[in-house]
Length: 159
Image (cartoon, rainbow, N blue to C red; front, top):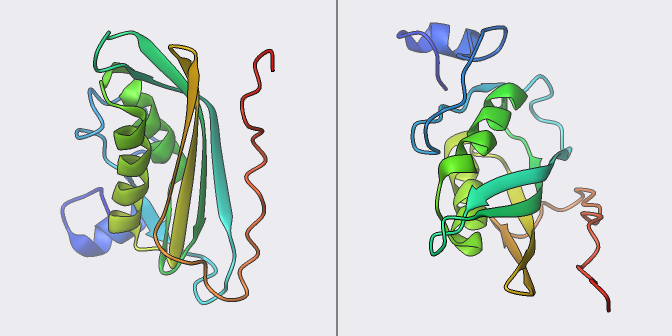
């Protein structure tokens, strides 16, 4: 968790929640806040959708656009949504291939938050005429977890 210097205060006071925050310079500089799960012990799914996600092509430096869908089953903590928004926004000036960006987001959240399960779908708009969809999940979903379809149609173009 992030926030004030003492560990007990950090669990109580997120860095971004209720504070003025600017967009981080890079994903590495972004600080994600995690707060205690108010329903710890319950099996449920949280979904975040970022339909206007942007990063930069590492070859051309031009913007790449994606619709990201992040699903996770929390354990002891949940990610604070404002810090997640700032983290995702920090990719606007980050060069990375679709695969690296999508999987990197999922792995960072999984490593830091330690949910029971996490998956991310990156539905990238066409680059060079080819749409690229990237999917990553931490493991098989826990038994009994309702995991709905991510609801993003495959790119059809003129098709």
